[in-house]
Length: 145
Image (cartoon, rainbow, N blue to C red; front, side):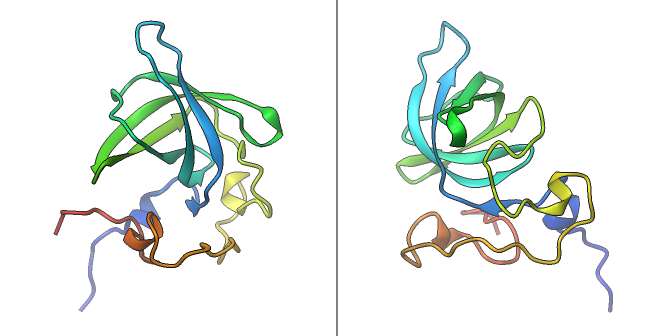
């Protein structure tokens, strides 16, 4: 029996990688005070997910700063999901690219064929957040069945 269900991986525009990269998220709206040092949880060439200690408004224009090489990149908040006392915040980049300096770069980040596998360093403490909520099969949705 075949399933006609589409997986999240098949719908993605590019490979999503688990990576802890230290960045600073700064609001580009002068009316919103946001200047938070945080770490990425997942990254791809369209954006990232970061863990923040506070809620942020979806649609807020931000700058991702202190990237590898001292770069910064504009983006916007696309999601904000409560995870206990913290928030998982999705950020979409204005311009697609490997701003994370990931090497080797996944082939679909540069327009080539989708890679069979990507080598990323394992987390230092297995079972520690955020790795405890991710499976090898795609996104985790705590509380959703």
